[in-house]
Amino acid sequence: MAGTPATGEGGRPAPRDGVKPALRDGGGAASLAIGLVLASSLFYVAGYSLTKVLVETHGLAPLQVTFLRCLMVLAAAGLATGWPAARLTWRRILTPRKAWLQRAAAAALVTTNVLTIVAYSTMPVTIAAALGFLTPLMLTALSGWLLREPVAAGRWAGTLLGFLGMLLIVRPSASPPALGLLAALGAALSYALYQIATRRLRDAALSHDGAIQVAVVGSLVLLVPAFLLWQPVPAPAWGLTVGFVVVQTAGLVCLNAALHRGEASRLAPWQFSGLLWAMGIDLLLFSTLPPALSVLGGGLIVAGGLLAQRRARRPTPSGDPSR
Image 1 (spheres, rainbow, N blue to C red):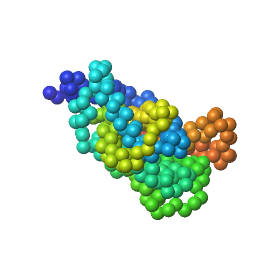
Image 2 (spheres, helix red, strand yellow; image 1 turned 90 degrees about the horizontal axis):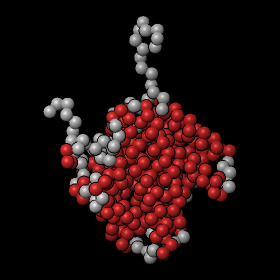
Image 3 (spheres, rainbow, N blue to C red; image 1 turned 45 degrees about the vertical axis):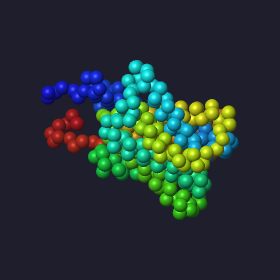
């Protein structure tokens, strides 16, 4: 019947990420989306730090760490199916709404993880990080084409300012090898496509659905490589692995929730904030003062994020002096 809301399982309204339409469309949604992107960046920085310890100190293979993350998330989702308040069923896990798009998004993120591992293993960290931060630029460009978002000049300027700020912080100086360069560019593109797909799924899937589908696809795709590269997991590493899974999954859920609430091109510059969190952690935990150029770069990242939030002025009707 016309005017009747779409319903989901059990006659409930179709899932909209638990967000009221007024919040989704109002100014509060944009502020909440920015906060979620900032939280996501913080979680990712913490997660990557734990990954470094697992690989370099405890000898785990990078693909093994990613596989363990997917397997643990899938196991947690399976346990949640027995908790009625979670409203999660095996049917929802195995046959989600818009399954092809959810699985394509998950495959894009798994591809990002694999290519990022290749990039970081074949070139200096600073070069790999700089190329990885091409994602916001690609996201801004693709948002106008694939999502039909109005990408105003301010959003482009904000993203470019953030990219310049990143270069001041990272300051890459070496020429990357061809394999590492292609892997890093592929990872940046696939991550941008993941975010585009997540934005398109905002009315068909909850924020945690994306994390679960990544776990499903990753567990299947990485099963054989992880088995071939498997290294013994020391007892202390299991605790770190659980911590890594928790913070990385929290980061992914926050990113998905942000893309459900805000336009991808408007949020793109704030993805550079991970560098600010990294500088803050160095300062607080290791008393490492950032160089002046890094501070300037941080200022440019914040300025770029604020600039991208400005709305383009609409043409004012002639004869209306109040506008």
